Each structure stands twice: as C-alpha cells, then as structure tokens.
Image 1 (spheres, helix red, strand yellow):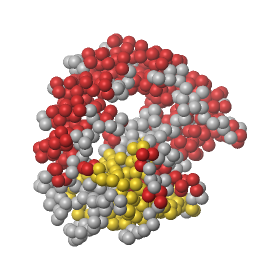
Image 2 (cartoon, rainbow, N blue to C red):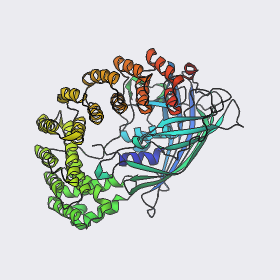
Image 3 (tube, helix red, strand yellow):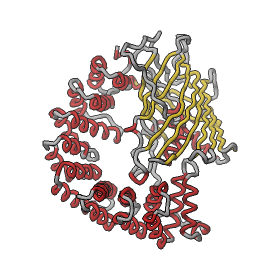
Image 4 (cartoon, rainbow, N blue to C red):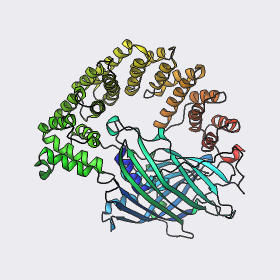
Amino acid sequence: MTRHTPVLLGALVLALAAVYTWVHPTGSTQEAPVARRPLACRFSAGEDLAFHVRATSSARASESAASQQLRLEATMWWRVLEERSAAGWVVAATLTDVQLLEGGAADAEPARRAALESPFLVQVGRDCRFGDFAFAPSVDAEARRQLQGILQSSEVILPPLGRAQWVSRHKDSLGAFDASYMLDASSSDEAPSFTRTHGRYIASTLPLLPPQLGGRMRVDVLSAETRATLDSRGRWVSTLGGGEHLRVWMGSRLLSDVTSEVQVEHLENASGAPMALAGLDAERFAWGSAPTGTTRASDLPAAPEPALAALTLDAALADFAKRLGAGPQGLHDATSRLASYLSVHPEAIPGVVAGLRGGTLPEAIHAALFLALEKTGTLAAESGLSAALKDRGLSTQDRMRAAVALQDIPRPTERTAQALIDQSRGNRTDAEERQVADASLLALGALSHRVDTRQPELSRVAHEELDTRLRTARGTEDLAVALDAIGNAGDEGFADTLRTHGSDESPLVRAHAARAWRRMEPETMEPVLVEWLGQEQDAQVRRAIADTLAEQVREQDRAASPAVLAAAAARLAAEPDARTRSALISLLGSAAGTDASARLALVQQFHRETVPDLQVLIGRYVRAEELR
C-alpha cells in the first residue's frame, strides 16, 4: 500500500499546501451581491510573464521539538504556448535564480536547485484555476511535487458569474477544500483585490492511512488568510500574500506543526525569459499530477552501516525512537534504518514482537514498528508478522497492523497468503477476532491485486479463498466484507458474481457490490454500472455506482466514455441525492471541454441546482458566459 505521509508532509513544508478554518456565509440564503464586472484570466499565446516568488515555512514534530526552517526564493517565468478553447491556456513555466535556505544556511546541493529549475507545463483555466501539470521524464518525483505545490499554494479560482462573494473548491496533494472569497469594495475595477479564506480539508479526501498508521490523516488549522490583487489585464495576480498555521496528525500522534507564508509579485516589463522556454518541446512532457510516491522499497533494504549493524536491539530501538520525531521525513528515515538493521539481525525480530506484546515499547511507536517490519522484507520478517497476526497477546489493533504489513511486504510468498487466509477464518463470534479476520480478508484481496501479473499462482490462491468466502458468507455484514475484499483485488473473474449481487434485496449489499467493480477494466465494468445506474431505486446504491465510475475516470486520468456520459446526463436531471449529483457532475465535467452534450447537461443543471457548492463545481468545467 502506498505510504502517503512522509511524501505529503515533505511537499507540505516546501510547497505550502495548506488547510484552513472553514468560513462560509451563514444565516442568509440571499444571493451574494454582484461584482462590478466578471472576473477572469485572459492571456495571449506567445506572451511572457515573470513573478517573484518567496515561500517560507517552519515545521516541528512536537511542541518541544526544535523547528526546521526552510525558505525558497526565485523568479518564476511563464510563456503562454497556446489557447485551448474553454479549457483555457497551456503555459510553460520554470524557476530561475532559485535560492534555498534551510536551517538558516544556504542549501549547497546544486542538484536540488537544478531540479527545481526544470521547465514544466500547466493548464490555466479562464477562472485562473491551475489544472493539469506536465513534466519531462527526467524530472524526479520530489521536484515534481514541489513545483506543483508552489503553484497550488498560491492558486486563486474566480467565480463562474460576476460576484462579490463566492466559494471555490480547491485540491492539492493532501485533498480537497473549499475557499471563501470576498472582494474588497474599495479596490478598483481594473485591479480588484480580495481576501481568500480557506476551508478545512474535506475529511473524506484526506489520505486514508492503513490501521497500522492510525487511520485517516487529520489536519487542524489555527490561522489562515491570503490577500491578492488581480492583474489589471487579467494575467493572473499582480500581488498575493498570505500565511497559515496548521497541525497534521496521524491518529493521536502529531506529525508536524507548520507555519508558512507565501508571497508572489508580478514583475512588470520583465525581460530575458529563459531560453529553456523558447525552445521547449512540449511533446516530451507527460501530463498528470506528480506521483504520490511510496516509502516502501520494492526490494530488500540496503545493508546497514557498520556502526548501526553493531548496535544491540535495545540501542537500535532507541535510535529508531529518536529519529522517528526528527522532522517531516522522520517516519521514513527511522523505519528504513530499523529495517536495514533487522535485515542482518533476524534474531532480533522476535524481540521486537515480544516488546510489542509485553508493553515495553510505547504504544505511540507501534504503528511505525510494523512499517519497519514490513520494509525489512526478509523471510524472518514475514515470519515475525505472521506470528504477530495470530498472537492474541497483542492488541487487536496491532494484529490488524500485522495484516496490513503482510499485504505490502516487498516479496510475498504463498506462505504470506496462507497466513492471511488462516487468520481470516478465525472465530467470528468473538468481536475482536472478527475485526482481525476481516482485516486479514481485506489484506488478502489487496495482496492479490499487487501480485496479479507478477505472481499469478499466488493470485490464484487468493481468488479461490475469496470465492469460497463469498459463497459461504452468512448475513449482510459478512457478505459486505467479502465484496470489499474482491474490490481490493480487482479480480475480473468475479464479474458474473458481482452482477448477481447487484440484484440483492439489501441496499447495503448492492452498494458494496457496486464499489467492488472499482479496479476492473472499463470494458468490463462500465456496461454493467451504466445500465444499473438508470434502474437503481436506492440513493445509497446510486451514489456507490456514480462514485465507482467517477473514481475510475480520475484514476485513469481520462474523460468518461460516451455511454457513461449519456447515463450521467440522464440521471442528473432527476437525482435527489446531492452527493450522487456531485459524482455525476464530475463525470460530465471530465468531457465538458470536448463534448457539447456533456457541457449542455452541466449548463442545464447549473440553473436548476439548489446546492451552491455544486454550482461552483459546475463552474470548474463550463465557461462563465455559457452559464448566464
């Protein structure tokens, strides 16, 4: 399973991808006052622009920990390459004169600065939204995240209609949030100023970490505000400045306390755009958001340095605990280091499990210890995790962490699958054993998906067990867990079975059956879900169908097919459930730039929509003049 936390926090500190306190107009349902003129970005192909960018941040892992300081200062150059109809413009961008100061000292690593000065492409919408990003293959993942984050931290999104107050949906590397905007009544028509106050992240969009890492990430916001003035000619902003203070949590553990500021100033009449933008070959760039990355290595960890290898287990664990809280990358560095130690000290692994069982190791580091065992990847580590999974002397949560670690070990074997199978058949009359059994079955499905092409025999073992569990499930709860495990597996051999469960009398079972199609190929799942969407009477199930279709479109970064668009348009007009409408709007929006019928369906929905946030969502995909 992808490990989001260290990567996201690293990008968060540099790129200022922030989350803010929810501020939304309350108490009144009256229409917001109309702005003096419609607001929009307006560029011309071939023009060059320059901006001075300064971003600073300070992060610490706890109230008592020392803070890590970081400052980036650079000139950001834009060259407008082309206009793409309703989608806006394609802009080539690059940073020059990058200065990095970390901990009060200039960063002396030339490779890091060079990576941040790599050209990239970004789509800028007519509402000034930053859409898709594209990078050359040579740009490493960390630089992609940082460059993308720099723009996202200073993004402004203008309203689809002329308004003095509006709310726009933003999205960055952590998740989605709503930002409330208010025009300054004293600002000029030519260069209007406004305040942007960002809402907290929508909980369901934050990374869902595995149980061993404490569940869904949480972000608390202590303060946040940004002020900006638009360029008088509509070329993004002339000035922007803001600051925020937030805390990021993993379960009950504080991962980072971050304060940050960003300042952007448009440099009028700047000349000397980098030659890298003039001779850019846009065909070499691949569109798509920066990869989230993973902290789990695909192979065994590197051999430990001699000093680390010479430590006793107690000393290695003390080293681990100390490094765990050392900044945003502490979790990654500490677990990788302990995994390296355990790879050459297999005899120490039972001692780690014993410490977990006996309570000599603090609960706060248990999740990270299971991640270290997973990263170790040796047969001894696999045996240790299998033993932990069935050890009733461990807490239920620790045993569930062992199941998640087994699904993700770098080199799984049939023995890995068998350990999960044996535990998934545990005593289901005992509440705690049932939780461990369910976690093991879900992990088996995820393991099957990982090894489907590389280890087909192992995938076959998992398939047979999932098939048995589905056929022998007793009651809707057992059936729902089995369907979720099949959804984790993405095994198309279950397609006929899922069609059958799509007619189950229980809406809960039907909803889980709809979600179980999510990892299957479009040609397999779309005909079933498209027909089902038009017939389903239960709102909960329709929502699951629409979410599954929308999730696959997002994951594959493509427009919905004509059949899906037709079904979404037909359902949207009569759909009473707002969350289902949101998914249907996203499906239509994926093709609105090129498909006139999808765009028309969104325009019609805009005028009958009663939820303001969904009107804002439609405004992401359709030009303001078409919504009037």
